Figure 1 (spheres, rainbow, N blue to C red):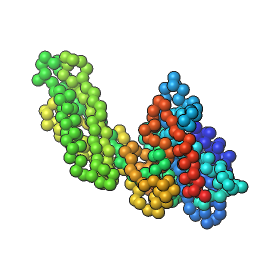
Figure 2: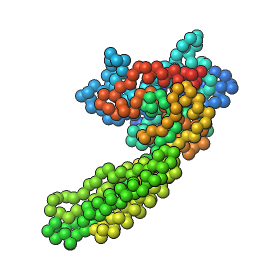
Figure 3: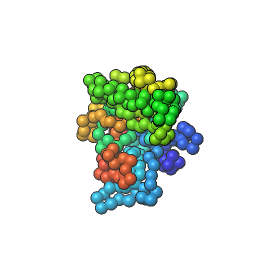
Figure 4: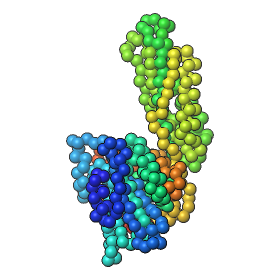
Length: 353
């Protein structure tokens, strides 16, 4: 995917850069020059993640077929290769002009094809570091995600924690000889649920934080006092919270709950995912893109690469925008309408021309 994108961008006249994120998983960037010296003073960009979630090969996930309802089917068609296609189509389009958009750009423009968004913002983090190394500053950045061509200016952050509780294993006929890690784990779940209820009163612009125990593992047999247990939880944080503070606070609450039962011999925890909240204040960029889309800016529940650009001076303004619905993303039959593709191409053309 990265190779094909690099080749296509080179054909359109971009200067292409490769940036390996992990072995065999590179980011690829293409920079297009503005039409004149004045236009080159402004840098705009689009971040499109090149990875997708897994597929069932029995379902022909990469068919690319267009059905009678003018829907394009295939993994990634909605999330988020539609924006990439619309961007490349806009750049190569002549519309009513004699020259393609690449020769009429009102700015310098960068396409960042980023890796590994679905597992974490590894590609976005690498792109942000690359911008720092190259001393490149982006004035306006679109992070591509399926938003039905509506400007998104905020979403919650994500903290995921694993709590590991160690008890003492024993035969179930003599439970007092052991420490039941599952009992301690159940107390942790209750404590997390209580915290979730308390957070409902802490509503901010992005809503209120949530904490959900999502997985539990424990036990080796029906007649054995569990000597260990693990609880995993998913936490969504708002603009008033920080990843590190929330992680430490929840760990303290969970440890206290586990030890209070008398069934916890030791307690450990670690963070498995940490993504900051994203909140772009309403400004001229947000208003311009809102006018181009014809929709009122909104917030979404899912996370994006936009979080990675919140605390860097190399990206001044960021929104999330793209064709298609998040409800179609990650589905076995992923699709996007051609109408949404055309709408996104039109938005990008007006933004860049």
